[in-house]
Length: 198
Image (cartoon, rainbow, N blue to C red):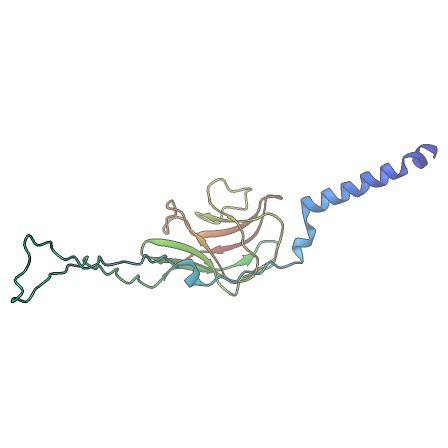
């Protein structure tokens, strides 16, 4: 008893520290708090435009003074102007509905392509149960039931569990090969949601 009385504040402090560390590690609050995102499809395909400038008029040099009785003529040249072709509209390559894997999930995942560039988009109806350390992976199939997938394209942490959001796809993406979206909780090595891309 004397030991407990003497060190009770140390024990209480250690207990509080353990609770705080456990909370930060497991983040149970994430299961009940939504992280909303509001990106549009046009945001994904915004391209920077470079303004073109024309050269100022050039007056050719003359070797002698012009005759005062004759009209003077000058020639001007401008830089040739080139027009950039209008980009094509984004087209859907594949899409599928989210389903929950021991968690709730709904919404639509879609692959869009524009001029050779691919984007994975979670449409505005996306609503996936939140959790700690969630990542977006692209798989060749739904091979997640045998443990942590070993072959996938990692698109980074999910931007939010609710709302529209866009993810650039890297050059190794193959629309004929990568046909499954997986929301994976890295901290607990467990799947949260999936969507087949058909």
